[in-house]
Length: 468
Image (cartoon, rainbow, N blue to C red; front, side, top):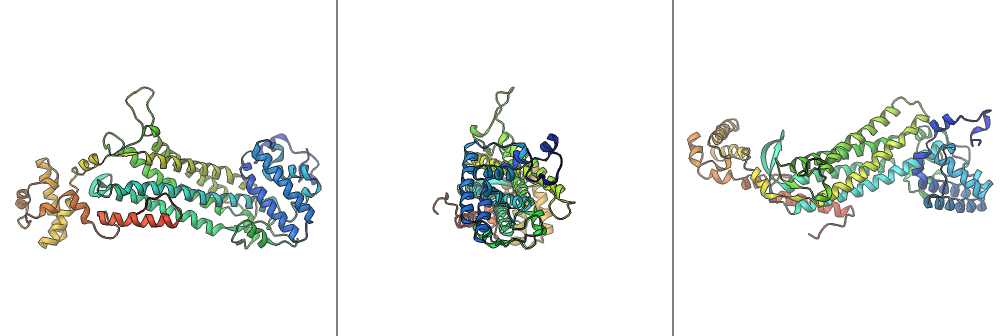
């Protein structure tokens, strides 16, 4: 069968070229965007007098039939058609005849694919934001119940200072908020219409690009057609945004893996989101967070793949950019399932406050509080206070107790300036609640953070939060 573009060719394309050149088996995901874009283009052509009203009506009805055939599964996708644009246009022409051949007036597959792919990416940006907000909502709900649940805060994966579990979870909510903002910023920046740029330089036909842009929901039309048909920044941005989001997911997944181990026992994943061993019947494996951690490498690869495709392309469109879609489709599908299962794994997870509290008695978490006490109540310079506190920690180690439980007499023996009221300052609860600076872990500050994220999520239309 002759190709639609084959007028100047004396020989048919080889079967091998058809297989190598075709994108139809993956770009058909864009069928809805393609049909909607084609209908908007036809309506603009009719408004400009390039198509008759009868031709427009015929195209609209024909496209409605094509859409129904695709969604019912009877549409036949053929490698010989190369891509979804040719497949849909060919089927439209089979249904309505000559009017179908006029649809491609004043456009090229170059601006057509730029339109379809851009609209898909913009839509997915918004859908991913909604999923992120759901994960944020679950984390905030868990945090609401654990503002006084003590947890060892760590640096270098070593016990550092006592915090509360809610405060720790809200750190991830902060990360996910930034992710939302990145996706939203990308939509704002890339919400421009490429249709009407044709192959690379615009068209001599009397078209109205603004009309098409408005009907498809774009803020404006692109400025320079040469750039527009070859621009894939919007695709790179969603790949970068997904990669950054998956990095945050992976960090949380790593903590869940550690927390669910016998060494920590801070949380337990539900049976629904755990797996067993084929040989060791006692095992309950955290496969969900492990897979989340592993899939991060997958989306990083998709980002690097498209960056590499784009790095040496001259203007304007080149066939290389056919390689732009599969990585995006894969990353989008990966983040969608990842956010969904992360939300459910968190929602069904059991928190174990007693184990967290016991862990706070390991590692002398109130050491900084002793140093601060010496500075504030005894007038000791901080560097000297640091040295005195180090001696107190060493003595607690010799006694086999945590610094928070060391007898006052031992502290007095180290430095007589230490008063008996120091014991109240060294309790784990006091240490956590003493950190009242803005953004700190004190319960009063943690509650402020919960209120902040409640307000943020409500302002963004997330309505699954309890009344506060």
